[in-house]
Figure 1 (tube, rainbow, N blue to C red):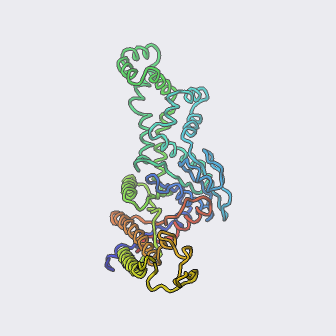
Figure 2 (cartoon, rainbow, N blue to C red; figure 1 turned 90 degrees about the vertical axis):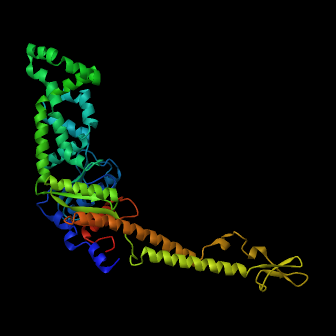
Length: 449
């Protein structure tokens, strides 16, 4: 690569994401870590929360990841729907952590916005139980509900949100509107119509105006399910407007200047393609994007040695080792004279004993047998060649990651980037989270410039 081409691939200072100023800014009240699944969003969110707390802020991390490793890394037996304080945090700040309980959050909404009798009817309704446990988009919606609850309490300086893993980055932004539209949609209004009309007129409307529709729905859904849905709709009537209102309020909260989105991705083509799509969608929705966290980036302490040079050196060493082995074999050609075997040009050695005719008999135990460990141990040249090939593979991986990153930065030069090195194992404690936070804040590109 030419010097001009190398300079074009370097991240300019304007494109290096500075996270400490973001975390220290008292105006920053919400940090949302988002992106596709399996890129390290949960660890990134926890590391940012810990760093902000150790820099003096009172932080709560809301995670959606049910894995126990995050709770264990924070020294907590388990996480639930209630924030729990994390012990062992250095500095004057506080760190609290919680894991979203989707159904419990939905139950809390019902209990807070319905009288006890109606709340009981809703909570025991079979359709509600299915809706609250697994309706498409419910998890994303409840994450935003919980975010709104936490922000309304004004108990924490900073809320760090680990968004749900979604097949599409759009699910997170669309879920509040989707669920709000469902609860305020035409089907709900039709099912609710008999209760709103009331009395004999209502029954007449149900019998005449809805007989065909309910009959069709009964065949499609089953009579009992349709009855459960209608009972649920009637009980939830007074709450539908609240869902829509809170969804809109949370959406505006996400657009507010005190919110910062961090898109987390791995240096892989699919992950960065989805990250680019998410960046574009955030811009279209006027969401405040802070930058991209490029996670699990591979590096090398010998980046100046290219893959091509390493492979060429490995081939030279392997060729030299092969030639040396051939010369050694030629020097050990066995003579067959008088039916007795002797090694050509081989003097008596330790461990040999004289025969009656004066010739030397070699002790079999003193010489390595063919195929033994001594005969098959790799030479220094072979070991070095193997290491060079491993280095070449690492440099090829770095080159792929660099090209992938460069395609993203060329497409979105306005997006600041923070790179975090790939670690040999998972994070198991606060020290590991602290290390990730320090790497995030270092502002040092891991990929070769």
